[in-house]
Length: 314
Image (cartoon, rainbow, N blue to C red; front, top):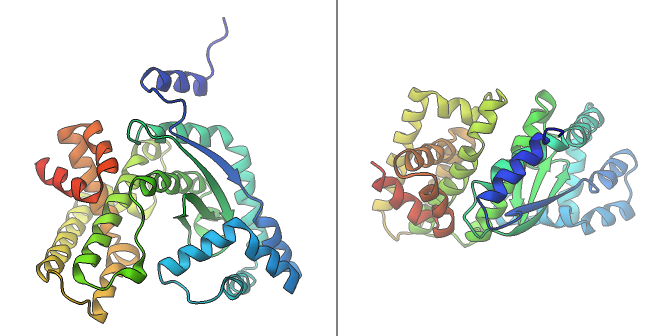
């Protein structure tokens, strides 16, 4: 008898522990790359209109509006992105490399997706699309779909990051199905900002932690968030800073936000990666002391339960 294929073995093992066939099924859609490359080579009004009608274009623009990254119309938004892309002399090579890697690593993609299933609450049953785009952010979730930017230099330096970032954003797809995402345009008071911070801490922390072991197995831990998380000194410093900031904000209760308060989000995300590192730390503490199932259940119950469970884990 021929030995079972490794992917089939993993799939059978999963079926033995789950009542569902696929908690998350994913279709990869790279069709948006074609009109973007065409417009990059020969801009035209007609092609820009075609671009703005694509689902990936609409979802990307909606994300930018929701998170106050643009006030432009969808046409002006994409025209600006493509103008910036035209300055990248390596764009075509980046895109070819990213598309080739996605095509060649289908089995690894499916392996990682199967691993990801184990990080969703029992009863999860989602279908999603992973869109490939050019420009905007490195990766994000918008309206139930995951989106990755194949023109990002990080992917050119290490193509495997395409796979791991895809899993990160697909984790967000399920998280946002259980916990509808906020709109920054509706955030006006300190308690609302605290809710945003806790939401992102929970969402990003679970996503970071879900890929820790697969990254460790693949020796793919050079991503900044994992380097900080695995450095005990750096992790402790960020966890301390995070809770200092959050506590000070919470003591102001339900008061109007000041202009400088918005700088907190920069520290939490891009600059110091506070909610990524702290969220992953909290997830690890919960799993280590209360078990994997307790950690996963926080996704169903939301950010408040995540923080409550973390404090109970000591």
